[in-house]
Length: 186
Length: 186
DNA sequence: GTCTATAATAGGATAGAC
DNA sequence: GTCTATCCTATTATAGAC
Image: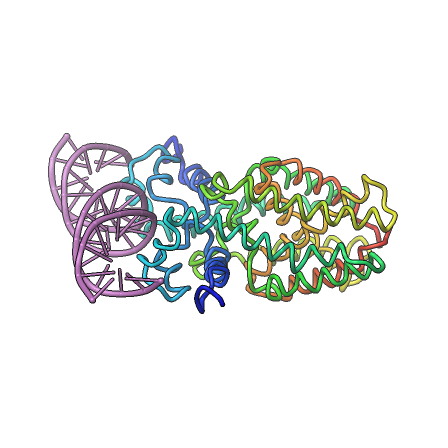
């Protein structure tokens, strides 16, 4: 059976929501403890190295969900266009329809950027690579595939920023719908 | 003559760099004071309401530079495509070639988002409107113009996020170059 | 106007009881 | 494993001298 009703994975996922909403510097220990419904001292029992460790584990866990929920569908079989459509649906869920920000954004600012640069770069590059591979399978040249992959990520990140700033998740959803039509254009 | 060698405008511009690098919660009074080479107490002399006021004035000042350096070129005369190209060059300077983040991103997180939502939304909408007007002048339908404007802003914001996360300003510069080719496509 | 000094509070982290 | 209590530092903010 599970180690506890609130597994470590569930704890880390709840912590991730705080970092996604408030960024690293804006997430206080009090906020983080409240999110998992524990005292601060209990959090330190689980994360002896404190906030820096929480951020690191959040990045690993979200990297894993990205892999399992989003990138894996790019590698299934069937026509590339259909896999891309499925990925976009998964992305919509991953960011809760534009209501959640991306850690690539919120953990790349200030000191967090220096702390987590390597992990952030790695996540981005895995995603870009999976998209590039997909585009290659659809017949894109290597150069076109890499550009298209970069554009997809730019659109996802940019629409999340605008959705947050305007408090209008529809910006993100519209962008996903338009992205669906960019595949196979060239 | 000027009120001081460091005019208020210059002070606010230096403060803006801290908010753009570290976000609102990550910008400490010590950081902000160091950026303008003053003691913390002197900063409070100039901004009696503290950090919240600094953020508000930074947003106003950057909104003004955006207007003067970027949006104004969209409203000059000459062919729309040329104006758009000029805007992209101005955008490149505005974000220092991808080395500076956008306040729409860094001031929309956590409590800052609640504090400054109105100002952020207003800035975004002014920019979108100027782009939409340009596209209309180039013969786009109202619907296509609005979509294109949104896509341009999404690309700017998204490429800035990725450039920061990967510590590679080229992501931003490449995106601007590609944007130049999106105008007049439909 | 700017500074040093200092207050007051919040944030990160730990000790030790249960 | 979780809590209360506490410590230490950083942070926000102010008082008062120059």
